Image (cartoon, helix red, strand yellow):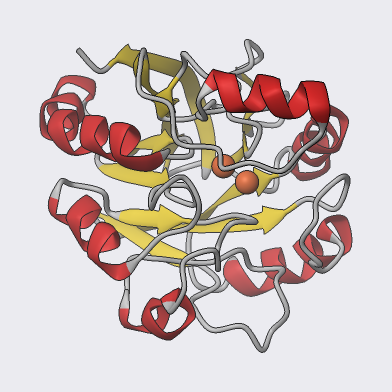
Length: 261
Ligand SMILES: [Fe+2]
Ligand SMILES: [Fe+2]
């Protein structure tokens, strides 16, 4: 049965270092057929560049997704089209460069992977996720046997609602963006694997992957500062999902959280 390992937001050098060092062994140990990772924070904590995207591919990441930090690295808008294993959120304006989805294949079974940005408390102007998803499902189901949606959103309610909205229509609805793992991984009644947030792959002694002191200072006086990527307690977080090719639904979803050392 095809098994997908999906990793949450890779944050900075600590996050990508851990993924690059551990992925080969992890992939074999977990029996994953495909690895997809969100890398919206992989370059300096904000955005992605072509060189890191290629390093992650060489380490065994089959597909890379992005989020609201998609364009944070200068020039990435000119690089993204050359990266066949990278897709940007599908509900960004159509004029944006980059692929809107990726297709993974195993023994003739095709899984389409795409990301939608949520609309609540998100600073990026994206199409309305609940309305856009209908169109995307119609389109993508023609290209593949099953659908994986990464819902990159801030509020738990918006993400839980999307899980119920797509239950039975997608093999998985997997939350990212908050960088904090939630303990609610489950298979919904009609066979959709769901979790509100898989958490980040990055340093947990920090605030969402950033150093603690500058964040505390900012919280205290409100002054702008640089927020360097934190360093300690690096963990690789994600989910392992089994998809039954016969039903095109998930049969298992398990959260993983692996210390880098
Ligand atoms: Fe993120
Ligand atoms: Fe994000």
